Image (cartoon, rainbow, N blue to C red):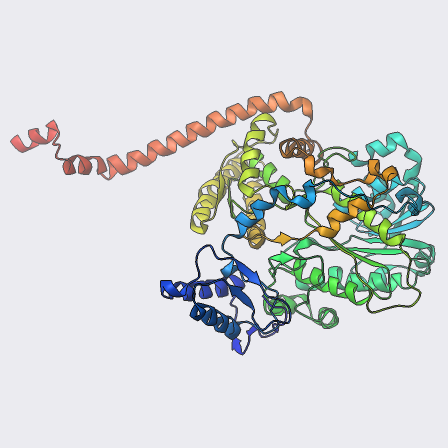
Length: 636
């Protein structure tokens, strides 16, 4: 939908559609066109094409008659704002999922890559040597992998300052020690244990003004030359006020801090490929936002959380949640400051377990496909409402981190302009691989089923099973039968045994998470990643061993997800590999119990229908068969 629409009124031209979302709007268009005479419709094989930005035609479709062309043009001009020239409404996408599938052998990724490195530039390790690095979000998933990679592959770094806040009554020093003990840092502790002392915690909070930094901390950070802004709230259900203060205002506060650094060479802002989900083709460029970031910050600072939550659906326009809304505003802040600071905008897609560096399968959360596989493996997730042909755009975290470091090196080794220029380009990288190596949701689910027989989980409470469906009513029935009722039954047993029930609460969280993800698992996007792909060609030969990331094109998807499940066992569920044989035996018992329960349910159902309701007698009567006992009754 066009960014020029007023977020406060949700207008299409001069017409108002209160609360009408993009799906409903597109469905209305589709119904209208479907009612045209057959001769006036476009052929089913016609392709939708997007017009140029200055064109008066919004979307053009190949048609057999000029009448159809004029009718569709006038129809769109009535409903769409004149500036929506580069949008492709989903109503006219003939088969977007099939188009996405055709990218699996994309020529950009599979053809030999030209080497475009500059011999005069220093290597990546040489560039970072002696520098002070500042990382926000260093205690998050991507932040941890970034810090480990910098310390291991660029060990001559002077210091990495990590913005941290006290949490769960733990000081920042205690949290730092805990982080260094993670399995992620095992390889670093074995090879270069001394470099861990270069991790320096700094007390602060991105959601606070001035990042919550004291004057002493600011003086300590005065020599920082590279900033990685990774901190963000990735929860889709965060209150609007919380998301604005952290994701949007936090970016502004970081930029204000960066303007005080005399030796700054790079400031990388990590966003998301899904920060502009109202478009189905995402180029590596900045898109207009639904609101002004200055007004949004002012509103968040003025009103209370409850008031903003009431206004959120209207204020955010058609964006599905507070995360993407506030991240899109943060991109506007970055774009407006590109002429004053050496900025980079880095957009990763769904970031999941490591592919191989430093260890295969490491992860510290249940986000993305890994969470789905674990839920299915435990037996608590047996249905999901999504498009089975939806592309799961996941990227291994080590691929993202390598690309981030290479992008920072590229920007930092470029000649910095002496005079700020508004025409200065903002490097943007869409870090995604779905157009090179893609997997559909149905493929991942089937792969998970096969892997669950090979690598079962110790905490399995029922036999893995279920599947995905596009029919909402079907999904709700399966949620009732496979999620809610078993949870109530098992929690009741736990209460009788004097143990704390947990399953109903867990199923509530799973259902809430699925609802929050519906927008993303029912739609597909085409992410253009030319800059991300070409960036690898600029890596110098001596850096290929540590930072070359295009080898993901050749990786084995089955082996990767096998490592993901093993990693989930080891690092998330804290299960030992030597317990796998015992887990296999437990899985066999669960499968047998599952068959017995299903047989009992089917038998009970047939008994009620056939015997209690005498359906068997009715069927026999309809086919003309009269049992012998009926003759005896008649004779009497």
